[in-house]
Length: 371
Ligand SMILES: *[C@@H]1O[C@H](CO)[C@@H](O)[C@H](O)[C@H]1NC(C)=O
Image 1: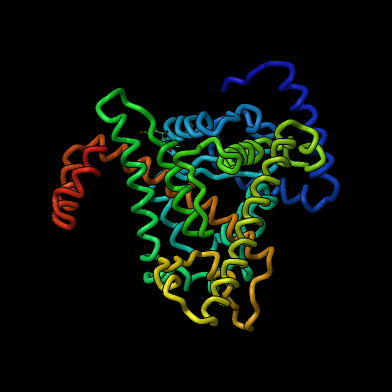
Image 2 (image 1 turned 90 degrees about the vertical axis):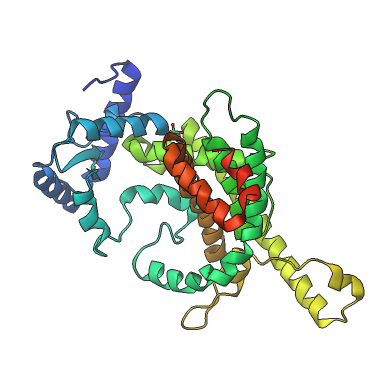
């Protein structure tokens, strides 16, 4: 395995070894645990030289896209093996890439605890649905489930349609030209939809991708992923001195003040609407379009089994979680769906036929012309 041999990397490696030695060996139990894992994981093959404590971290690509390709390469060269392992610092990761090895994991509730690397999402997302575990996750999940009721989701269809037509118009301009990566366009559309449905707030990401908030979401996802792969960036006191750490701090402030503002404004709006309801309805009130409710409204009203409301921090961590998790995975799935449809014209034709059946040929022609 090729190791980038520049001295900077070696200095980092040395620092990492010292730091991790201090961290990991400050007590005996973690050391024993590490040795036990090391021994039990031995039979599982891995791609690299795999040094003690640093593991494979030295040659993993820092950039998300490159790392993805790197993992694909690993899975190709270990195709004949059931699974492979990567040690990221003192933490082992198992990579599964066969249906037979993925299925047993997905079909059990045994492995519900979030991996250590989720810890680096906590400063931004707190311990919301994505990052929490056990009892907290269960009770939160129970409180939030009713907000996904079909009747509530169907109210959001209008937002989805509105934003999708903006996306379609954008894609139309580029169709029939050179091939291009549509991921950014889709991501911005997904961000617009999640912002309005989760917070009741338009952010106009599709027309204003340079906004501070959008940029912060972007940079943040990127630097957190980088941190997860590099054990020498793990200790907070080291991180806060590095440029990534400083960016992290700046973005955190932008992201949290945005959601703070959205929540406070929504609380005010709801209060005002409540006051209006109690007053006499004038004709002009009746003319106003019905205010759509957002996921945030339901969080503000939700109560748990013992009748407790969510605290402000609880609410913000769920809103932040939904803003991130509600666009990231969706955008990736849509991106690849479009890619697959484009690569399989016969399937694309079937989809178009189905749309025509449901909506009539006029409305779906616009959609289909963009695929
Ligand atoms: C989006 O899809 C394109 C293929 O059209 C692919 O090259 C790219 O890596 C995908 N991006 C992400 C982030 O999944």
